Image 1 (tube, rainbow, N blue to C red):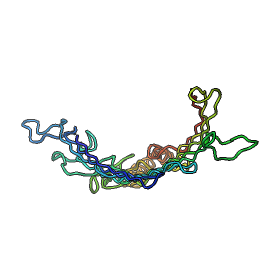
Image 2: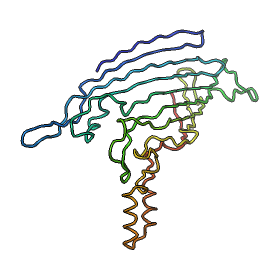
Image 3: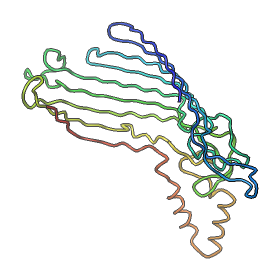
Image 4: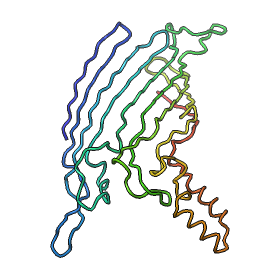
Length: 287
C-alpha cells in the first residue's frame, strides 16, 4: 500500500482558518477469489490469489471557527473516488466463468460526497461567564449544547436482472453502477458540569448529559434489493416466478393470503435502514 497526502492551512483571522488536503492511496496485491481455466482433466478450479488492485483519491476542504461569543463551528467537505478490481476477497466470485474482471469500478465503500458540520454552543464559568444570572448565580455555567450533522452520498451497488426471494440474480449494467440515496443525520448532546468539591486541579465534578442520536428520526436507506432498488420490495411476488408460486398455493387449497402476508413481513428488512432515534442519559465523574 502506498499513501500520498499534501495539505495547506491558512489563517483567515485570529478566530478562523481554512484547511485543504489532497490524498492518494494505492492498494496492490489484495486477496481475491480467482478461477483457473483450462486445467487438464478437471477443466478449471477456484482458488485465491493476490491479484486485486485499487486506488482511493480525493480532497478535503475544512473551515474552523474558534469560539466566538460562546459558539464554535467546524465545516468540512470531502470529495472521494474509491475504485478497484474488487471490494473484498469474494466480490468477483460468480461474476463470470471466463476468469476475473480486471476493469476498475467503484468499490463498495465509495462515498463520493461527505459533508460534516459540528456546532457547539457553550457557556464558560467564573469571570468568562456571559450567560443569564438569577439571584447572583451563574445558572448556565459550564453548560453547553452540541450538534453533529452529516450528509453523505449513497454507496454503490450492483443491480440485478431477475428477482429472487429476498434478492436478485444476473448482473444488470455495470458492476456497482447504481447508487443508494443520500444519508443525512443530526446528533445532539446537552451537558452541564457540576462541581461537587474542591477547586482547580483538585476538584471533584460530575458531567450530566443528555444525548439524542438521529435526532430527526430519519429512515436513512443503507441497503436495497438489487432488482428493484427499493429497501422494502424485492419484486419477487410481481415476477412470473412469484405469481406461479402464489397460484400453486391457491390451487393446492392453502391460504395464499397468509403466504402473502408472511412474505411482506419478512421482506421488511430492518438492516436496510439506519437505526431510529435513540435517547441517552448519563453522568461522567471527573477528579
